[in-house]
Length: 275
Image (tube, rainbow, N blue to C red):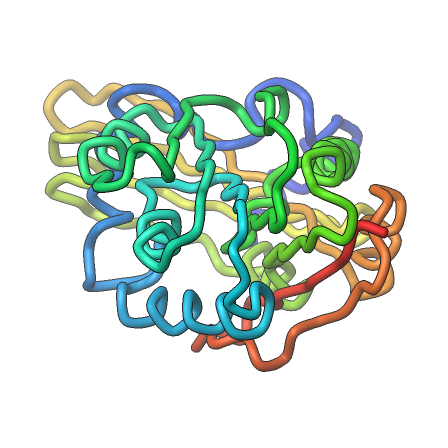
């Protein structure tokens, strides 16, 4: 943990300026797509075998095999949307990564039932009459609490009466642990931050008053010694805060889904219903 960062950041707003890595930029988006598709790790998207089990769980536990129209927020390269469409559902997927959306469209075998849109879920039109809205893999934790509530309210407005929401949060413990990690330095031939060899220095800080982790990625490219710094901010929630967040967005019947097949105890799936 970098205590200098803690001192410098304590009085600032965590959500001003660039508070997360610019995944929507063309080069980041292209490199991130490779991370989504690899089967060597689960850092961007889960491995296909886990996704398949989660799709089976969604169909059995949430959709109960009924014909459904699904909203997939932060859909990435369409790994869930394509599988759900293959089972007969209609899906609208929204993501702000151009490479991911391009890939999803290229792979789409059911363009009449599976639609992908490039857009920021904070402002993009979710359309109406969905039976299920889903936001997986801790995506909501990277937004400020006010933005998270706004996204949930938009999801609420897009659902039919009685529609379901499933949202997967990173646990409070996992985000706090991220912030308390020691500083590390990585040497990369190429990777997420550059196509050229680079050094990445990662400093992390946990702010207990605000329940926030801030990670700084200082990237030094070897061929020109150019240095760039990127920030990743994560909001942690205790269970009661999650319940209140969902209630404030107009949802009821809120509960944690302990049977969700995840293989990572750093995530929790919550479900809720539009009254």
